[in-house]
Length: 91
Image (cartoon, rainbow, N blue to C red; front, side, top):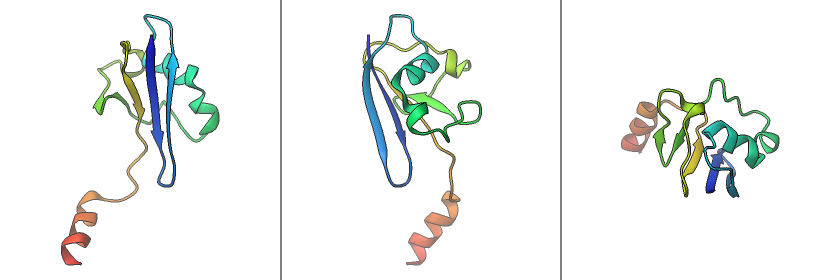
């Protein structure tokens, strides 16, 4: 089955398409993609993951992926969204 795995840092993005076996989970898809080797700072025990912009269900890493899904690894927020909005308004 064909899925995508995405991860972005402030200065670069990665989107990989790969074939995974039917019945694969979010975690298996991430591991098969090789993204953890390219970005060793990713910590799946603390970072959130999702599918097409929606957080994966309760068992997040154990959630099953479907044909064509885009698995996303979210990095931690580094700026307070309210502060960013205030700066835009003040500018």
